[in-house]
Image (cartoon, rainbow, N blue to C red; front, side):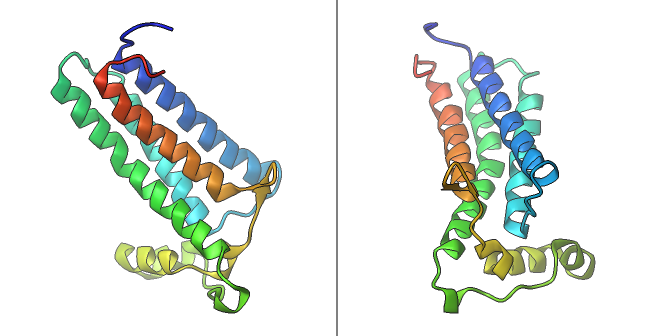
Length: 166
């Protein structure tokens, strides 16, 4: 392993993780015909936005500590949204059957007919389709998403110290 790897190297690893996450979500939808629920779509948007932020940050020099800290904060914002979305979906999937919210309108209908705040509120309140447990290698998909977002957050934070964690 390289000692004192550059923050751009850490960002490149994060970008690769984002590419894998976004690619896997599209593969599951369009090749394996998994139908994403609104919380799944929020997680997809979070990973794509995180990847785009990282792509822009790769163009910046990260020699100063302040630049690294600002970069980590910019990465953590969409990453936190993804963690909350995945955590909420895991919670909904573990509710007893009689407490699962009923199915609501689709995300497109909600966006077209409500403000963004109302859309966020309704999606995070949950719907029956978000409580359906879809698995990949016997592990629920939102758990995979949660692990990915936590890995990204840890890399962004630990990369600041310029130590050989990777």
